Image (cartoon, rainbow, N blue to C red; front, side, top):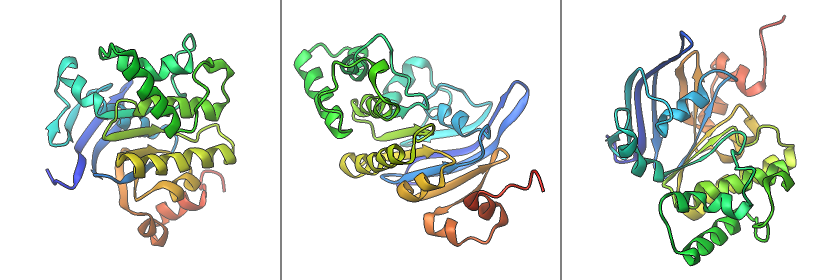
Length: 250
């Protein structure tokens, strides 16, 4: 494994309901960088993310995180790997019956932290990172869409992960709130020195946060490279995606 990469995926294959979704995905994620994974809706981007935290097991292929092959680990063996990875789910996945404080504290309590002072201090720091100070006692139902995403992000970073996975972080948000989330992704990368994978089809978000870009197309990685390489490419598939052109209806 290349020491510059946090994650290396080789020939990853997966089917859902008899349909081949991932057809041999190869991808490197460099340490300390933000990689944006682009692709059409329903193209397998979220399925790919779920493999990285062991929520799905590959039919075949290899997934190495910091050199450790995770694809065949048991649930117990996966636990220390999952502690290194925070995930922002597309819908936020907050517990509606818990306050913001208890939602953010949940991973610590789940892993056996007993000191309320440690929990309070870490929750406060996480909420400060996402600019949600003073919102601890609110219930998720009383938060705006953007605030729900930020609370979910606070929960994702409380365990001090080395990698954060973002599943469509700006989906359903207006442009102003989306810009807030994009700025947060950048801020967390610089302040926490984390590696990030951002799954999206939002080119505005891509242009704001990406160091590296990959395009998933028809179950395989069609392109990987820098943001400038993406924009300077003459590949018609990439040009159509960047410019939002469809050939479905002529």
